[in-house]
Length: 181
Length: 183
Image (tube, rainbow over the protein chains, first blue to last red):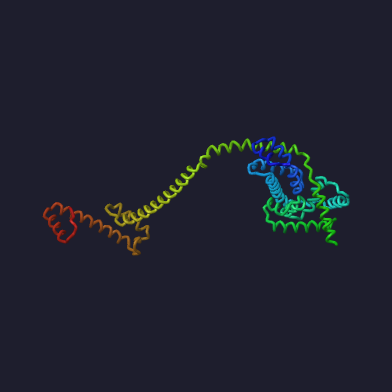
């Protein structure tokens, strides 16, 4: 659990405390980055860059809630930039295997956890037709289960635009699920 | 019915994705790398900030800042005033050149030659009027002006030498209510 006391201790320049903050923050930062990018190395780079940025801006963080919003904002923005650049040489993934994994998991009761590469494959296939903005909004809303207000605060996108993009993303993904699953 | 089935499948897929949190296997590597990078940032950043603080921290003192603003405004005002004066002087000087040109005296052959050359280059036209005259006429005019000047000098010399004549001229000038010319 990240509390303000730990952040305050880090502000003094204590590397050991900051190491602890990195240890506590990196799993959820990595989770968002990996879901957005679908690549372990890129997600790790994003986490590292995010933590360095956090270190530089520690003085501006006043509460633990603000810290969490900050970390999401930095990760999401860095991933969004990555996605925009990546879109130019996008490759379509092998769909058949993805759908077979999904149908197998759905039939299992209770369904077991996906491996990282499986998650990457499924996320890649489902969001392949979405724009970077739609993908970001879909992941934050549907996977990370954030509210429109939270997404708006993190991305800086207005709530009406979030709703419109989310509607399109849901429609596109449910259409694919219906078609192939 | 079909809609419900669609939603059910969609929710199932999303639940699988929500529950499957991506695993971070090399947390220690990330920690190590982050600490390494922030150490570098600190080493290079600290000296620069210290230097900037040392050099420019005085600008944050209130009265220094206000004085600087006043000085800057004054300098701008002086600059604008100076530009105005310069412009005025330039206009005045350019007018002076025209007047001096009008009063140019011709006394030597070289000056006559120069004037003739200028006259030729200007397309045989006087700058103030559009009357074309021949080169010969121009030379005659300049010669006659020179002759008048010579005759005037001779006359003045004669008046100077003859005291009676000088007195006579002075009286005549007074009679004509003209300004007294000291000969």
